[in-house]
Length: 179
Image (cartoon, rainbow, N blue to C red; front, side, top):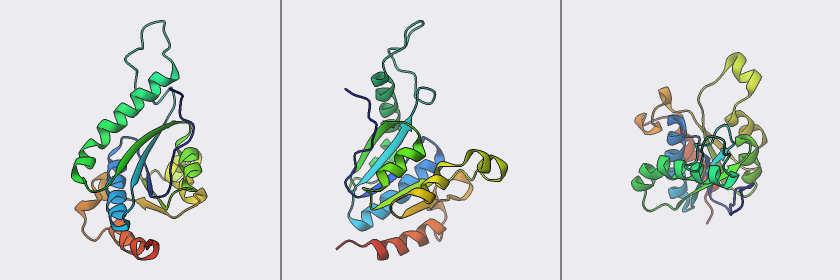
């Protein structure tokens, strides 16, 4: 096994997932949009040694190979998205992990996507300016339309029936309908 450096994608909806509640809300939005378009969803998680879960092979004095970190990251992603997969059996949802910067890897893959969906943690003010957020960078540099799901209070976007995300979904479905 080699460590993935790119997100394999051929159309469909790409969603960035970091394991957070806003990422789950973004995935649910992506699934609803993909269902309307008749497209698959690819859920991507970028990782680094500092963000990956500790592999089972890790031991004092032993640094596991990158492949073990990648496998641990994929297992964590699969676990995180399992409930949403179960809610949406009619939509193909693939999970992929890639080594690198989340924003860079999502932007890179956006050239092969019909739509990118990202969550927003609402980082603003000075920290947002200093660090930049993944969603901000994806919006600026993606090569396809981007939907930022700003779930109210960090909760599920479905809790608010007339949310901005649902209004955007309707607009996207009418604009992106690929017949």
